[in-house]
Length: 184
Image (tube, rainbow, N blue to C red):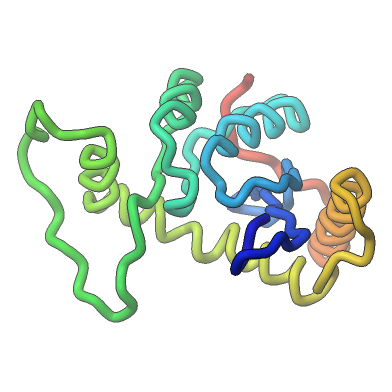
């Protein structure tokens, strides 16, 4: 990835996490500088790995890509994707009332959806599902990549995700959790 006038070998890792069990159900490593266009491939990989589609998903603002979100929503998955960063400690806007204006953009509709009570609750779950898992993998299992090259790094990250899942299953008493989702 370009950085400060030079090229730095960097990777962008994605994970899809089951909200109830904190198990990683899909993962991928790429070299794109942002997360745009990564949402739909992660949902597809989740379906391929589990045979299920999520009922809802939440993602940070890096995943805000209208084309991707529309593809995912066409599969009956409800998306809650942030439209930007909110300042820490800032009082949230009031929940919207009434019908949305007809001329509202895609980003405006998503922002309005996140301001509703249901949207806030769905997006707030992300703080206790995806973010802790990413921190656990980064700080416990894989603080940095040891290998070079996308193929090798992908394998290393897959192994780290498998170790994370094995630790979760071990702590839960070696019992596979029931994934709550819709049949694919």
